Length: 446
Ligand SMILES: CC(C)(COP(=O)(O)OP(=O)(O)OC[C@H]1O[C@@H](n2cnc3c(N)ncnc32)[C@H](O)[C@@H]1OP(=O)(O)O)[C@@H](O)C(=O)NCCC(=O)NCCS
Image 1 (spheres, rainbow, N blue to C red):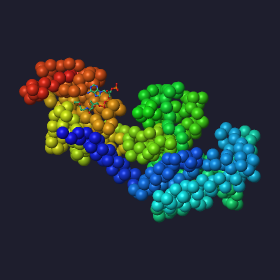
Image 2 (cartoon, rainbow, N blue to C red):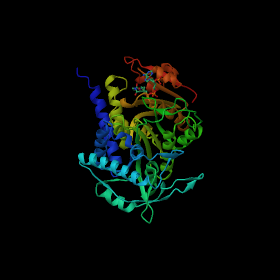
Image 3 (cartoon, protein in one colour):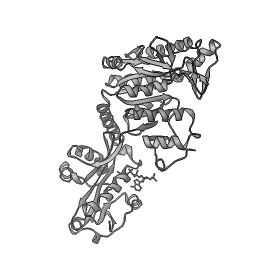
Image 4 (cartoon, helix red, strand yellow):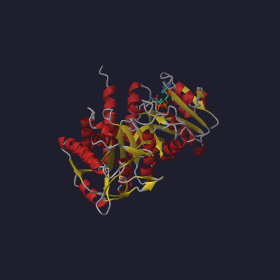
């Protein structure tokens, strides 16, 4: 017989992607791309992926990082690169070279966008002023972003262009300043409604090894590579505070700016590596991407199901029904009891479900626990079952039971114990299928 499992997984992934496309269409993504990636063999693939995002209706704005190109050009002209606490000191004589390097990076980006049928455009939309003298250090032609001409950028984005903002800003007299591209990308979030801000470099995300953790960061979501997948803004602040000497400069810079961008209104800020094929697509179109995301709004939640969720609940259960792990349910069965169901949602996608049915006399049945095949072993099932157990007192349910054939050990780990036929409420006992011979598990006195 044909093994339909890979096909079902693929279909589930496609459905998830559809959900994300509907959600992100019309949103603005700001991408800061490090110039160190320009020569990498995967760079054309990264740009192609970005072009695809734009073609499905996501607005894209690019801020190129230019550090490496500026260092190289300065060295060619025999001018030393000077930094103070990671911030470049741009002398008057270095400024034309900085502009030259920025033009070079922008032109490379324009060529790649052209090759993918996209229209990039560059302009003088950033107003800047001198960073001045800080700690006695004169930063000369290094500036900070003062204002961004949002209206023009909005027009360009609405007309289907990809604006490119190299890290150069001008004062009112037209003098150019070298601004930080990370700060420029972050500042854009103050001026525009940004759905996602990406920092794309060679950093794959933040790992927990060697980091100090506090109360909020004890349990963090890790992806399959051990990288922290998601941090809310409070966790990001805690990690930054506790690890000033453990995180390296790029990670601290990312976390600082991610917090700032989120506080300015960006929904999500992602740190992803451009060296890993498809990382940006994976980050956009799946609930657990390759890199580390800092977010403001609630990103995953468990909520009571509604009638609209019935197809998703049936879809998630179907795979397990076919394997005999769950008993079959019709759309009407689920619809009639929809208020008993909880769903686990990440972004707009439903990844798992479960129900708590009231059998009277304080008896509650935990049932229909199922987690989407692509998202198992990520804690989804546990959150659902614990939420159902947590509902019991409020619903006047003092003893919980469930029937399972395949997940006994898993339910033991969540506090269930072996039970007997007598523990079931009478109507359920009468229906007990001796042929199926399910294990009866209970939690009493809840
Ligand atoms: C059982 C199920 C709900 C678990 O959901 P989940 O989100 O994958 O589980 P969690 O992430 O919370 O827990 C994962 C852990 O449980 C373990 N686990 C998962 N299914 C298990 C099972 N059937 N038996 C024993 N352990 C199991 C995993 O190995 C993992 O262990 P680890 O943390 O040591 O790696 C899910 O696998 C599922 O949908 N199964 C099919 C439907 C089913 O059997 N439902 C129960 C009948 S009502």
